Length: 311
Ligand code: BDR
Ligand code: CA
Image (cartoon, rainbow, N blue to C red; front, side, top):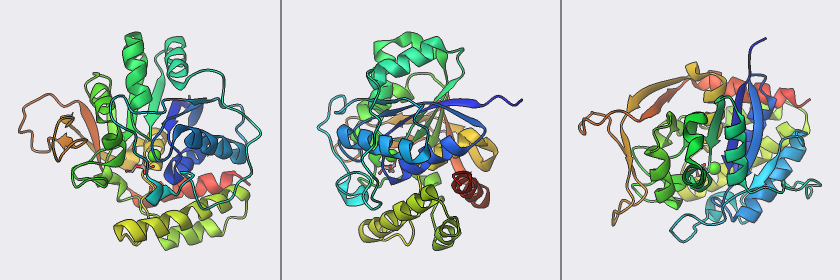
């Protein structure tokens, strides 16, 4: 039997984080070891509640959910209510979860799972990198135990400032720790995730699937489409975070290139920018596998299959 890829999703749900979790839970190639939460799209109390709601609707209550950092390492916290609503996951109405987070901090859980592992766990951060950086600093012995980190963040342009993408901007110091860790990193930046647009045609395909999870994803996309139209003038919303899980399922869906990436933490205008050395001008060793293109049809087929999986 094919071995499943073990992943921990470290997230801030978040419409696209929720879809990432649902994709992971549905796909036979993924073993979802844990979900950890962080402040990002909303405060960590809210992102944790949202993660629990997603776990419950997915029926994966055996997957531990651990609450993590409520503040970035250094900066004052920023959230994204204009994009994700006040709750961090506005739109669909889900009942309050009956399950609770585990009694272990996200950082401790990440460290414990990695140390107990055979070095076969991939970390999938889809929010600010605070928990991952804290885990690396608290227990450096985890570094050789991390198989890979598949990050949603960064890019050659920004969406929070002209230079910076939201997840990196919210905690660029944490991002710097992670990008300089020496651990294999694959980066799903905006250049890539803006190819993962949930067009109306995708929403129509999802609407044909009659189960509560497909209905939930459909409602997430309705809200997300509207805020992306209002705030960014996009016709359709990019489902950023699901790209990381799709990569773990089948890397061949993506074309990637190994490049050097630095994170700006001091800039007056460019705080949180990822400097992707596309033309090799720094002559520095590549430290990141940067995803460049996406096979849209294969990507959306994975999501549609996930929707069907739920009934
Ligand atoms: C990232 O920021 C959040 O709003 C999304 O969930 C995604 O992780 C995109 O910049
Ligand atoms: Ca996110």
